[in-house]
Every structure is written in C-alpha cells, then in structure tokens.
Image (cartoon, rainbow, N blue to C red; front, top):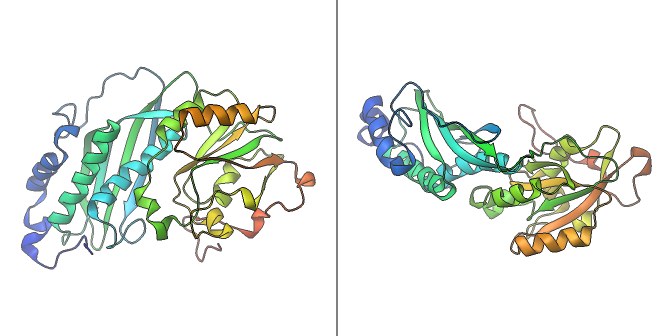
Length: 315
C-alpha cells in the first residue's frame, strides 16, 4: 500500500524545495486553481462578491488519524474536500472556493503528494470548487492538510443545529455504522443536493452532518428540555454494523435532521423519494421529554461517539 513517505531522498519534497513544489502544485491542480490574483500566487486570493449569505468551514486530514497507508493518496485528497462539503450540505449551502494549508515531513513522497493533489483536483472539478490559495509548512513526522471551504446559501434560509422542539421527528439519510471497515469514510458522497432541498422545507427545523457518531452528534440537535428517543430497529445500519457501531463509529457523513411534529410524514417521504430515489431516508425516533421516554427506546447514555482530545473515549 502507498505510504506518504519515501526512503529515497531524490523522490521526496525535500529534493524539490518550496518554490519548485509550489510550481508542481499549480500543475497538479490544473484548471481548478485560477490565475493570480484569483488563485495561487499572491499574498491573498481575490474572490468575487457573494450573491447570498456566506458560509465557511474548515476540516483536516491527518496521517494516522483520518487516513493510513491503506488509503490511496487520490482518495485522501478527495476526502479532505468532501469532509468540508458535508458541513456545507448540513446547512443547505453550495461551495465556492477553498484554501489549503499543508504540513509535511521532509521525507514526504513527491509521487504521493502529486496523487493527493490530483484526487483533490478531480473532486474540486466535480463539485465546482476553485482552489484559490494555501500554505506549505514543514514539521517532522507529520503529513496533514487542512482545508478551509467557503460557500453560500442556496436560498433565503440557512438551517442550523438549533430549532428542534419536543415532539419533532428525527430523520437520517443513507446508512450509518461500519464506515471504516467498509471504506465509506473516504468513498462517501456529500449530501449537497439533499441538504439544499431539506433547507427549502419549512418543516425541517434543524440539521447537521454525522461525523462523530449519532450518539454524540444528536446532542447538538436536541432541545434543552428534551431527549432523543431512538428505536434500534429503525436505525439504517450498514451491512455488518451493530447498533453500537451505528451510534458510535462516526465518519458516516450523512445528514441527521429534525422534522416538525405536525408534518404529514407520508407526504414528506413521497416528496423525498420523487427527488432522491437512490438516497435512503429513515425516521429513527423523535425528541421527547425526559419524563416521557417510551419503553424500548435506546438509552444513549450507554453510548458515546468520537470525542477529540478525550483519552480512552468509551464507545
């Protein structure tokens, strides 16, 4: 499997140096990187005025955390952009431009880095994202990239994580659990079209993407006077995934959202199928008062998703 490091000095980024590396990066990115001052090459990139409200998000990929030698370099580059696109999808936005900060060990393979950028460029072309700048820094033992993505609202409404109420239904797109073993964590498609459609539905009150596991992420959607009451049988689990995996694995990059209690759910489901026939939609529970949890509901206190900076996180 390809490693980001090379044992042959002539094949590393150190053999190029920063200036020649930047020339190579421009070549690898191709048309997705505009000419300066609208792209790489100036102190700042110049962006056109946004038509609507602007959105901004940032996410990294780090060797040993988000990818390893089993993941092709092209897939790593694509995953970096798609992680950020998933955040935009959760607010009903569309991408416009991105900047990328690289941190590289001097032993980083030029071949690996070229494939990383070509994967990033292919993904950027698919989703119409301009790569307009960035930075390169050196650090021993580290291969990491952090991408800041700009976007804009697709309509007059931006859906946030707040707004759900007691009685609202909880929905999730696609399948959850087993993202690592199945390769979904880098093969996924961000739900941009689905997120934009959901943002236009007034009955959708709150939304976010599932990156750290449903058990953790649902806390951010839950009204202060409520708890999520989930039914295990309704969880749309990936093949081979247990209930625990569905709740805690993370890196699903699906959308979880709250739908108003009074919504005609049959009509909502029909409208969804008409628009997104290939994207599964599941109602997995609802928000209820802590004193009114139905019998058989999952006790989420027994589960915990991924939490950064927590030692020995219990899952």
